[in-house]
Image (cartoon, rainbow, N blue to C red; front, side, top):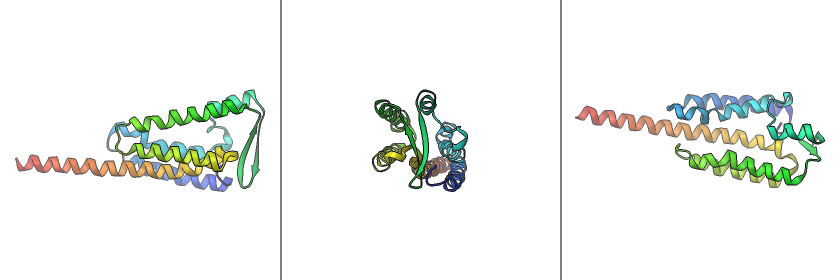
Length: 172
């Protein structure tokens, strides 16, 4: 939850709407998984209290260590006795796994998404350290809009090239 349950549900609906619009911008089958990312962000926002959005890392924390969520400063803070060294390792692994593919993707401008995701995680980690898990969802909404922009631009470029090829073939 970002700032409140209501904000999470509203944000989840908005992010999911962006996800649907983003999927409509897909013009190559290889873009479908990429375009679905906002849908996953939206579902994560709508269903956080049911446990569906927990990663394996947090399942491990819940099973192995004491974790207590509390509302503090309009955010959800997760208090845990999980060793900091593992938390930092998990954070770095998460960055590597989620951001690295964006720098090697064949989809134009995904490197910008990778930079934006890295900076948003870094800002959240520095300014909202206590609320990292819950506040980063705000950035998920912004990232969803960036994914939409990347695919819309790619779709427009695809149609422009297709029209150019049609014009060339009709001139022959």
